[in-house]
Length: 471
Image 1 (cartoon, rainbow, N blue to C red):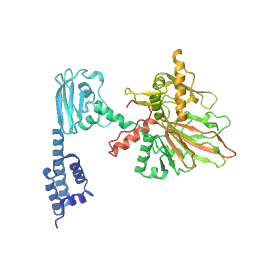
Image 2: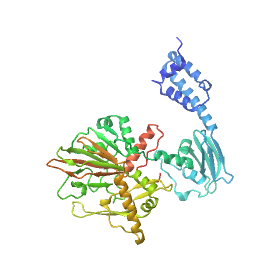
Image 3: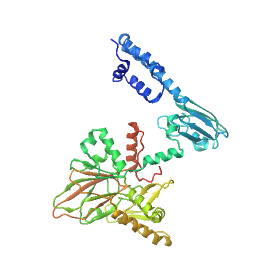
């Protein structure tokens, strides 16, 4: 009995990956070219015929058809790409099918050659020494085949190489492309309540885990609910993202009031807005604080969170002179403490705000309790403190502050390189307040986000995370 060819293909895609690939490719890549023009009608006849010739032979026929179809699609895509080399042979201009124009310098192309001599296939690492290649290569010949740009450079070296077209387009460094990527990497402003998700969901479902990681990346802070109030459980939450980052406080630390605190957090006093361990060259990335116990008798002790990037942007808008001062003049951050099991002497000098070459904020560092004496030229001192106090006032008055009283079983997960956190003073009143915490390296977090985005084919870029990266 005759069945609709389109329905036949849809049904077959459930069990035949090659046909699924065929239908997806046809809808994405061919544009005005109809499926019938590419010989798919012949493939559909094979679908019916396959019931009689046996599944093995049918598979061979379909494989041949799909390969033919892919070649036709690739040939059309390649034909739509225009290549032009400047008369000096130093720049390749590429006009892509979507109208995007890219210009690639000859030396840039040479350094990014993907041939087996230049790049190890499995690791993706370069194999050549910079001193081995011609520093002024000239483009002698360029062509497109098999999804790659093939290049011959003339000159001392005379190298023949190739670069995948998809990689080339992705890494285009045109002003428009760099501007687009910068906009995509911009963080989002959190409006309303902190995003919540259950521990059960993120530990058992990849979609929920991905959504959680994106929320952390987008907004900087999330709450994980229903985390068992057990020792070291916070580490299990962290390891859903990446390995725990060890610091001078170990891997897992307890936040509770003690008679002789080695950290101001280990007392009941108020904590102003700050970031943790900023005296490290690379301070911890994500911080996780798991509420183990918060007795009803305890008064105060609420946690507060604030996006430092948003307040820094406000400072730039309202007080550009002060903003420039905090970008230019370095503060001193320190931890000097010998009366502890592991004596510490750390000092690090850096400005409060760091910009990339496009003047975009890529890092904010703020931790008044861990600041040492200002060590700058005398004529910078007064102006620094004027800017410093103004920024501090904006933080205190910001309407972006989020106040949250953690409940037992809740775990706050936030980006310590972007989100400032604070704590109200509290009185135990005979009760107990106990949090457990740990850290995750910021680069490993960002890597995890980007890997999941890439493997899911989202086409998205991870947001900035405050690690001073200029991208």
